[in-house]
Image 1 (tube, rainbow, N blue to C red):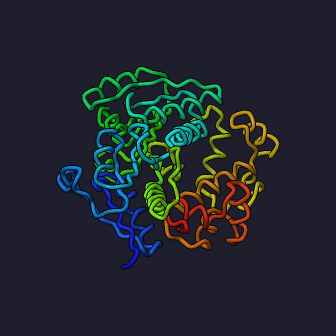
Image 2 (image 1 turned 30 degrees about the horizontal axis):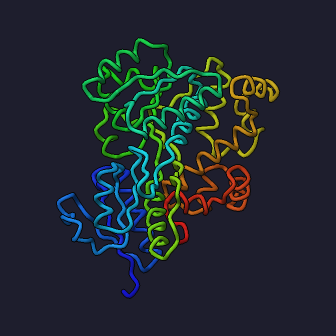
Image 3 (image 1 turned 90 degrees about the vertical axis):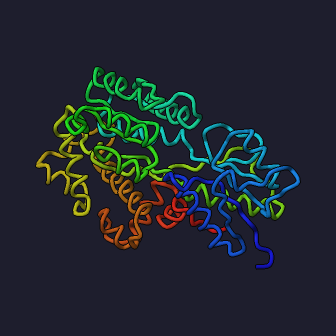
Length: 379
């Protein structure tokens, strides 16, 4: 095809995020029409010597090591990193907003009533540092402290699990990745007796392989891998066309949280708050307004508002809206359901109402949100 842009890819398809980035790159090529992918499966595929060049216009690498990237730049004129192991200064970088990942995990755990928070993960990689920082910053804003447990190796998991067990319970635990979450769960003698009754657990990546290997399913922050790939390809295409790439890191926010058994129960000393949250979570489709919630709980509305305000800082109406938006985000990002079906499942009578409330609460329409997180924005 005349004028076609050749995009090379050095991305590991063996890991969940790598596959999602590849799908995003492919998605851009499908939309752009004049872009073609070439998968460079490993370093043996790379040419040797400065005189040998890739027949490529752009090279997207799941790598952030300076030496590796500089070597790639000798063989391809334009290199883009999609790894957040280190901060890159030699080429553009499109990565997950890992500070936002930590904030999202903290918000989810605190909303479920966990006031004792623990971060588990490695101390060195940049992505872990940023995830821990976002987690701690959000918790601090709510007047809560975070306990850190270093976990750099699976051999350290038993001691980390034992230390976790000696701490205050119930606790909300945020693991730097699904790998670290699995290590912790596998190190527990009987994880089903501890999670979620004693510990809520959230990982990162929503990697199906880690979920399959784990003794129990656990909730996980979903990274916008397709959007990372899509934006990296778009930046590369624009670069070829003479538009200079961004000088600062492009951070792509996470999609949301894939919820599983490890965060199933919300822990509150107040039984009425727990009953209210359980009622909303289990009957969102049929609860049309505040009166439905009040009647289902057989309680005075003012009493309910006072209890919710004390523990959550929210009223019943806002709690309902938050639950609808959270559920809509999950469905929009993880399913191909129509807007009419999504509207029904989150308790709105029609798509127009979903669009109105979603836009007011999030700043974007449901369609724009779905396109953004699934890497299908206009090229």
